[in-house]
Image (cartoon, rainbow, N blue to C red; front, side, top):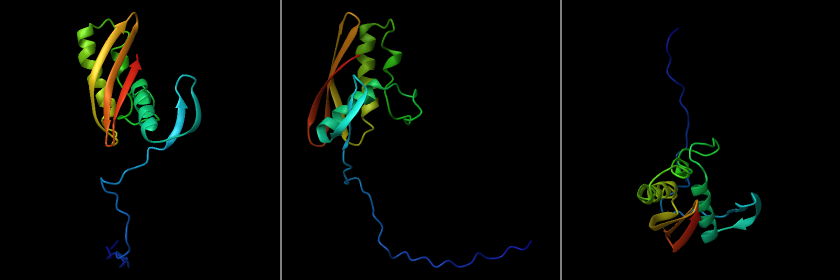
Length: 141
């Protein structure tokens, strides 16, 4: 079988293409989730959508649900419920939560962690900086 040249293809490269740059901001509009009851209702945007993302990302175990890629979720299940000294929790919880959130383009920084333990509950408060504002967060683990 002899090799023959490929046929010429007429391609028009003059048409304009939409180019996405880093300055393009994607909307945060999403469904409102009631994480306590597991119901969906309404639409949220802006600050509330970011707060919902933060809570859901922290409360979702990373690598356990095939619907999410490997960037989504948090690895807190390795720490919570284990016999781990408070000193280790104070260093690992900020690292794990920051890793769960910082990949999102809307989040610039995660900082100011305060961790308190009461009985079997762990209360974590921190701040999340976005382009527009600082969002205070509180999570019970």
